[in-house]
Length: 390
Image (cartoon, rainbow, N blue to C red):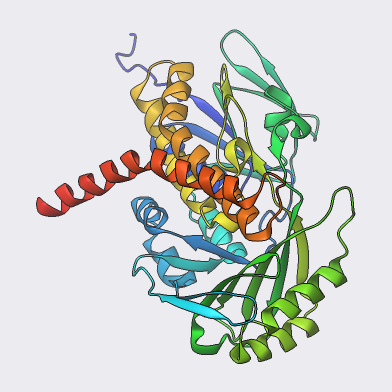
């Protein structure tokens, strides 16, 4: 006797990359009924100890993912900020913090988010993606361990140096915007005075200085121009940053002294991924692999978490994956492009990195803000209406 029960075949999704975007994508796709395989070529994909910012939207999405315990355990309230500028005489403006904004150590937060994934998500660390082959009804993925599997969907969430992006859309040379700026990262073993963040534009550098709450440490990230094709000299750049921190006021002297003694330093390059399209057939890019804004923006978590949610919802609402990808990109691209443009113009204006001049850079930034105003106003009005009906 034939059974009346029809077995439901779950669609399979491959998510490449165990960072913020990859973990969030795996969670949301599983939540929407997908069978998810999450891979990363690194055995330990979360090594960095630097700070990550969670804005109001990031916190909201984490809560929707059942991540309140993650927020409570590893994130702390963003401090008030002292914005400083000036050459001969330092001026400053204090900005109070938003109650919902949080900071967290990147490595700790991502490790917790990875552990928060449902047991039904198959995770494979130390497995690199080698090739993608489009077929009529699926995508065949080949891995570095010699295995091959078919999937209904592939999400490339493997960051700035994305393998998925290189395989399906563009090489890094043809998709990454660089402007000659270098990030200088320093963790100094000293508490930041008053536990108040300092943001400063001085001596051709833009710096963001934040306190760690869980230890008596201070995180320094400065953006400095390095003439191309000069190879950055890390000791020299660290010393320049320490000199700049020293000049921000007497209260910053202990921070500069500790920063000079630090052996926890690194250099990275300012980079933004700029693509005319984020998808092709059954493969889509998410987070930094699609539209890296750059760490100085502080918007990486926002882009990754809200983007993963938007992608899963688009796939739920559209029957065809290509249609879903198009809807997802239409929704997320305005935010990504505006954030990229404002971030690039801000650091280029502050450091004088572009030859076109500061007036042109500032004018372009004002244009970006004006273009973004209708969307921001619509979101504000929506929140106000929601508050009125609560």
